[in-house]
Length: 513
Ligand code: 6PG
Image 1 (cartoon, rainbow, N blue to C red):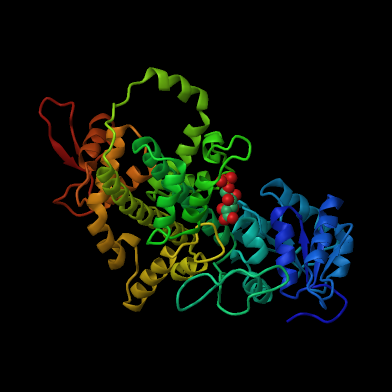
Image 2 (cartoon, rainbow, N blue to C red; image 1 turned 135 degrees about the horizontal axis):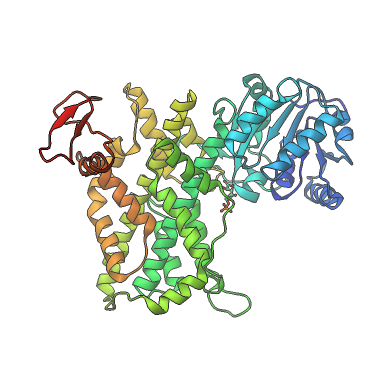
């Protein structure tokens, strides 16, 4: 409910790309916004943009503030303040400044950055009693923030009740019958119908954790597409434009996703300077801001296999070692590969499409399993159908595939089952069974051609590990017991019973501990 006083509804602090666009989105939805940034030019830029985009007959909805005290005085109480500043020290910096400016105990501060989830947990406790520290991870980049992001809020429930109407208004919307995003509006407009891509995730930290895993999946999904690109270019000798067409075709099938769509676009772009495909002029060194790494570290810490996500982080790391790669490309031998016939190439493209789909399922299975294990550890009640639902639009990994994940969790719940691993959902297990041979062919072709496919390959190893009732960890336990008396369990004894063999004795005997 918008207020009709001359006080404003919500403050946005930090007017970088995300903060500016969130402010405009909130204003499009008829809330009155107080905006602040340390850089006055950013405030002016926002006000000018709002003015130029404002529809005829609509009044100004964003007001610039020259400091935080002014912002606090302009907001209706209890206040809602959105922080859009870089993760880490800047968040505490602004919180400290808000305390100095007179923020009150029932005011809500929402951290919308990519903060480390454990920092969020600590901050909620640290600021308790001084103000309500709430968090909401935001996905969707610049356009998402402007026209409808996916929002992952967590923290104090009562604070969520106050924020919810604004969040539901500004979030991306999905058509509930098709599961497809409702087309984004032009500036000045808002979308009222559809299911909003936001839901209360859980207690403090849960939203940032879920967003962190979203980003881990994002890293893996991007790397999977990049591996397909390298296979088609280096392995099949195709041009960027030809690969773009393949990606466009895949994007019309089960691989439909925002990341596939933009990859096709990137590949079709010519470099305005040389006229060559732009992708060939972009240096092959990937950047990263850390959320994929955090996901991989979290998976290792909790003991949840997420090899495809971890490999995506390593792939970015190896990409940065350009000079070593340059040197070793002259030193290390690879296979010599015969050119493919047209028919072989067509067959391979189809196999690769299946491989990409299967690897994608495995990668999402890893991400969801990781969230599930962390939820148990932290006593969070995560609703995975809802999480998949709010990723169907607005966010970077949005894809029709998310609708299938939503359904898998909903069906399991309807049957009274808990979907421990997405690979157990019938819709996915049957698709993987029918496509797995193509997946193997694609990985085999990559290996024989000397094209690295760390993510497509590790996803296949993940699949094969989970379909193996027996793994060689029996030998591993034998090794550990041999050199370190670390003991082992027996297949013919109750779980938890420990045994040790006296390996160094001339007569080797077994003892039960
Ligand atoms: C999003 C993105 C966004 C961004 C990350 C990852 O959901 O909007 O995940 O958060 O892309 O910052 O960036 P890096 O690739 O630089 O780590």
